[in-house]
Length: 78
Image (tube, rainbow, N blue to C red):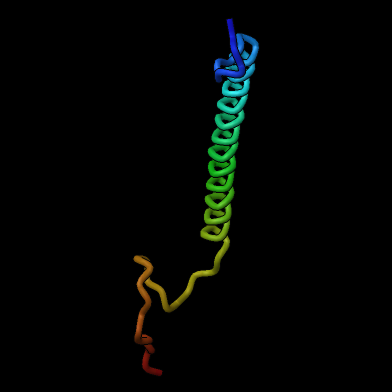
């Protein structure tokens, strides 16, 4: 039999502790899944923005096709 005076929890107390642990574990897992979902959503949003900018940005005459900045201008003689 449980004796709270001696620090022995009752069966009800043990069940309550187990229920709390399960609830905390479930809440922690839900938070983790939400964080993963939010990160994936943000990654997709950023990729969409990057793709939109890449396809709509005007060509920069000072940047070559490899994305390197050109330090000199080629000027045709008149």
